[in-house]
Image (cartoon, rainbow, N blue to C red; front, top):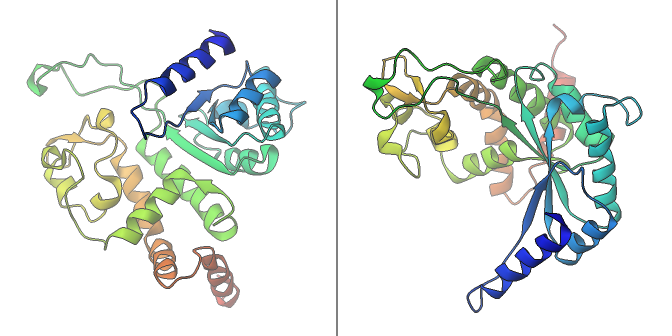
Length: 280
């Protein structure tokens, strides 16, 4: 629709705001249509811009060697930075790129210089969704592009191990920041999710990491629990592997924060531990 239409939409939202309300605007885009005029407006309004990226395009090592979409992503990030626009990356992780966690993370951190990253797992159902579990013919099916629970767990663990050793306080990965907030706010014990917890399978309600995952995205709760109950998150096994893997470092970082220290002190703690650990 163009910049003029976007400006009018923003102005209209501001005019309709209740007295005393503060309106904040954000934009999610592939970056293909960004130019100086767009970036000047985004900077004036102090908007956060999320660059939506299919992870397959982010595994090239340079702008020159990448695809057209890959070059557009680099150029959009550079243009936004030049105008002082705060931006992050929203990266889709699917079956085609889930085995390259380090390439993706390092591309955003080192290649583009993006400090805020959100990884979103691709889960696409292909079976018809009907109301009432007894009306569905056969178990739910997913597309070939859909990430498996095992892939998602391995991806998160690999990126976390890089982040916790080198990038705490420097790079902000949304799921890690959210997980640290959960560990800081609660002891590791079963408790109900904030919303809809009563509809979760018994396995979820008794899970020691429910306080962190809260059952996952409602749209992904179409698997069966080990005891045959519906409503289990399709990616449950992946999230459980991740939360179990990060439990100890999250406890350490939460303790650091409670003691008035920065969470990034864990990097020195891990470095000392690994230097003193005997070789295998």
